[in-house]
Image (tube, rainbow, N blue to C red; front, side, top):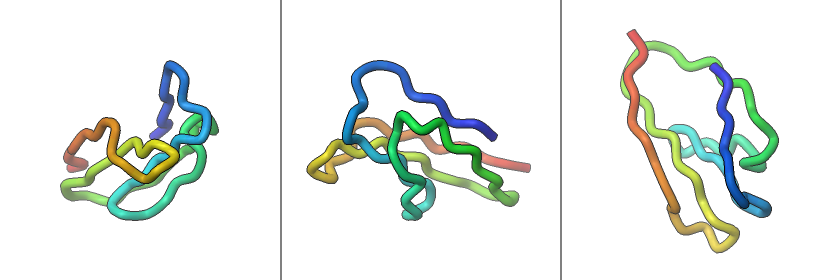
Length: 57
């Protein structure tokens, strides 16, 4: 699954299930197993700016 973020995200990080995916503007590819997952966008101070929960069957 590819993750793309739009807007001004310089210095922001993506976190999937408490695992840092790196810079938000890097468009990471992730492989998740079945279950419920949480993807979060963190600002440079580490605060959650946005998040989404999704289920992989």
